[in-house]
Length: 112
Length: 267
Image (cartoon, helix red, strand yellow):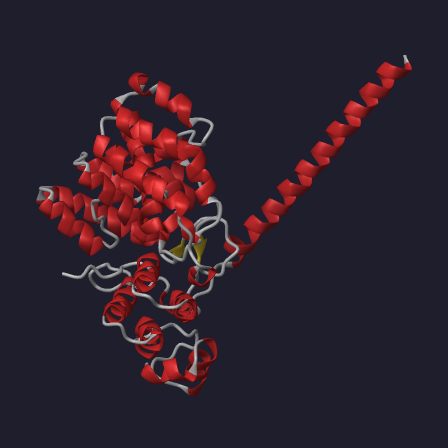
């Protein structure tokens, strides 16, 4: 069975192994930095940190050789459901969409 | 090379497969729940969550089939250095020690407090290596926990994702490898030697590194939460005060030396 990443370090190592470019790494790194802010202090009922879950999701996508945009979107796939944007509201809003589009790109945001 | 756990789920699966009993796993679960409270929101400069590092350290210890108290201690080994007990001051105090004892028991806490007091610098490692035979069983276990900590920081070449660690490995690596051997863990010693050798030769592109200037573990506070004013700002004021005080002391010492010198040369 494929051993998927649990940490950002394992994910970055995987991306390098799988031949993603430095530009791709940069995009995924940006997504991870945003994930750190959105999901900090959040745990799944199993006790597993939520970030570990999004990293693993991104790792599965990378193992399937999908584009860096999709891998980055994997890191933020539940941003509008679980992410803490600081406004106390759940769900999609224009401001939240603008933030993700600005930090990453409108293409990545489209996948959310 | 052994594949170590990086999440609590992986750790509990490992404990089951390594033969730790249900009671043992319950003790580790208690320590993990405590770690969730102490270290939540804390990240390493590499961007890795601190709690993942703690789980990795416990996993390394479990793979060596050490007593469960040591595995549990591995999960909270940095409690007195980075743990957030909700107060202003970090470090060892009667209050924090009592909190740890209450959460995980005295047997586990004694490892954690001794871990914090262990003089662990590249310069002190040769001395520790030479005195291993004179150490008590508890202190030998503390030394093993310290090795597991440093080894975990290097898993997946993690040390390459942060500053200064390559230099540290070059200085401290050989002594750590021989300490593992002297403690009676040749497999760990061999793994460490192999990993340290690889790390010295490898590079990580800047694009894969988290952009932070933090030299050590740092907190990422969720946007909806606010830290208490005095918890955030009083330590900064205290640091500024001690910096100014040290500067004044230094200047006073220099002035005194100059005066003594002038008095000597004049008379």
